[in-house]
Image 1 (cartoon, helix red, strand yellow):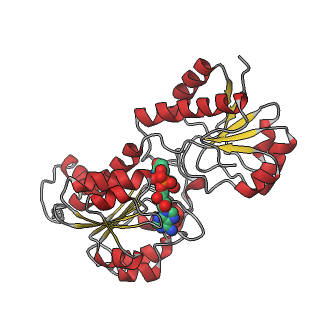
Image 2 (cartoon, protein in one colour):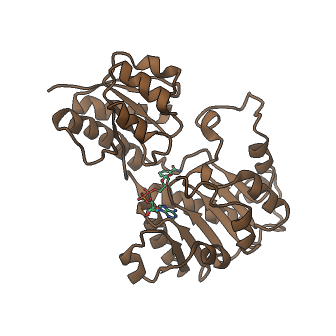
Amino acid sequence: MISMKALVFSTRKDEKSYLTNAFEASGHEVAFEEVHLNRKSAELAAGYDVVIVFVNDQLDEACLERLAELNVKAVALRCAGYNNVDLDAAKRHGLTVVRVPAYSPYAVAEHALTLLMTLNRHVHKAYNRVREGNFLLDGLVGRDIHHKTVGVVGTGTIGSVFCQIMRGFECRLLAFDPNPTQALIEQGVEYVTLDQLFEQSDFISLHCPLTPQTHHVIGQRTLALMKPSAMLINTSRGGLVDTKAVIDALKKGELSGLAIDVYEEEADLFFEDQSNQVIADDDLMRLMTFPNVIVTGHQAFLTEEALTNIAQTTADNLSCLEQTTSCVNQLV
Ligand code: NAD
């Protein structure tokens, strides 16, 4: 069997054994780097056929050009979103780009629910309070989710699963997506305009990709449409939310809670231990002072099933590329 030589960038401890197992079984050679891939670190890819990248690697024109000069043939994203790759530039430089379109929509949708329920029932506060022997209930009043209106922005793979989960709570489901899903309509999901969704929802969950159209879809104007009692959940991409606008809305009591797994400036912070550093990002630090804000560090995808599928699909993508000229998971 011909094998591909692959270099994994931004390697995390939690994923290494899954990737090693899948690549060994597929006969590909794999090496690991912890650094992010960008125009400077691209040099490390010399001698490799493929670079395997994640959400915070920066594959801009200069980085892709350098990879092509180094004779790298392909970029394999080990994630679904690809907003960090300049696809036009990849095409111009003759690089193939593949991704893992779906590995476990359940992992992300279930994390969105986890955040929603934690925020709504103040479990993050209760956890700390009880550990200090404080059993007071003040400030812990939540709301039944049952029969509430839930707005889902983006009803693709993950958003559809999230809709299914929320149907279990007998919620009214409002959705916005330029490509509505007939099966969801038949199950009672109502497609409305984005403004109607923001105006009517008690809980809003974002599941659309980050594109120029969706950048800062949550901003001053749209926050003003929301009920002051609304809670916002973002497990999609940080750039969907204008952080300064959301801080302003929280300060004024115009939004009842925010739970995010992604943050627009996460690239140099997330997936690393920053506990001995002074974090210079004032917006993130301000967000974390609010009692009604929860931040998790881009862990929505992090289940055993998802890690297994990511590693296997990435190895399969490489096998596919070495055997044929195109692959079903190919972006360019
Ligand atoms: P998908 O491609 O299956 O679905 C995306 C949906 O968004 C599609 O139905 C599309 O029509 C819709 N959409 C496109 N433009 C839109 C717009 N302007 N407004 C509303 N909807 C729009 O993708 P998916 O697998 O469901 O993933 C959704 C997003 O979740 C990804 O783009 C990624 O950013 C994010 N994600 C996050 C994690 C995490 O760990 N936090 C993990 C995986 C994916």
